[in-house]
Length: 405
Ligand code: PMP
Image 1 (tube, rainbow, N blue to C red):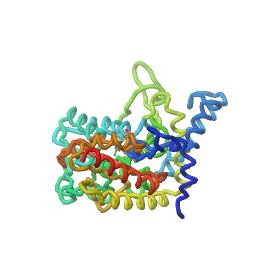
Image 2 (image 1 turned 45 degrees about the vertical axis):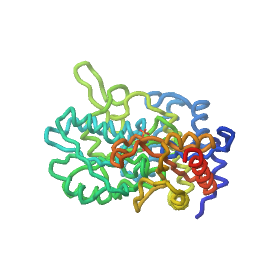
Image 3 (image 1 turned 90 degrees about the vertical axis):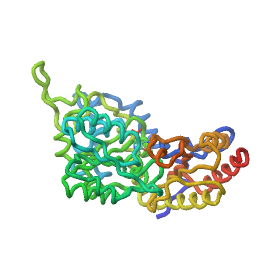
Image 4 (image 1 turned 180 degrees about the vertical axis):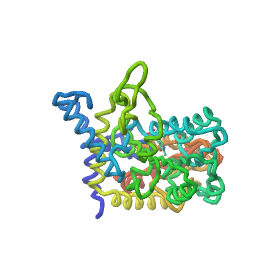
């Protein structure tokens, strides 16, 4: 099946506007994706007609909201192919999910233990582990990357040891687009009984993810990168691991009973969902998942690969342009620099032309340090983008070069 681009673009109201007098070209999808009308309508309808707090009320509105909320959990379960719906924890996003696990590992890690991450991580998969290590005396170890922006797998295998208590790595890199060989990592880690957490923030918008096939212990994602609302995300965890970890936050919903002498915690998934959750966000996320499922994640992946190839070829034609992240296996992200031109200047001129790209370190300062650069210009494509838009980017870059070259 081919993508029906005209129909799809109509589904996204935000795309049909002018920015600085030019039709918007939105190439900042790795930072956050736009929302189809079904998602926006779902949230509006919830607040207009259905709102009530969940899990607590006997009245009809509350029961209906609870049912919708729990139905969304089942949608996510099916989307990720988790074994149980109680392995799906609703969080604020990827950052929140990683922090939940890192907080739990504070009660597991001891002096001399190691947490293995990679040089390719977003800050949200570095800092929580640094904090956990600081509090426990454990050490952070880092898989280095090569010039293409790929993990050096030999080094990974050397770093994996009996001291490693967790491997926490990203599935797809936000800064360079590398699709990482997580299967090999999980296989090697499991041969030493080491659990693996995957940061799936950038994988889930581009590909189908099957957590049972992957066999990872934890998988974190963000709703807003998956065409859903901000402030909502998912942490998948294997049942036995979620049972092993202590609660992240205390409060309502996460308890079975409370007295001043002793509190007993609720079972999964509620143990990790303290307080009134983001009900509208959960319902919006369900709509977003239904939307991309209807298009087909394989159809999306194929079309985005076409955009990536086209964009890479166009940008490579420009003299003085250098692409950072040239892995064999890549998602639709192109990070680049123009010789002698600061990324902020490039981004500012492109914005004047209505083209939204991201500039800077993309919350991955260690990658920029690795390449000895202050940051990059990043164009990241979603399935609502077109080759014509990439042509506009190409023309825009020529304009930037003329101004600053
Ligand atoms: N990991 C990766 C790879 C990301 O791209 C991002 C978002 N840029 C995050 C984690 C953090 O996601 P969020 O800000 O939605 O929590």
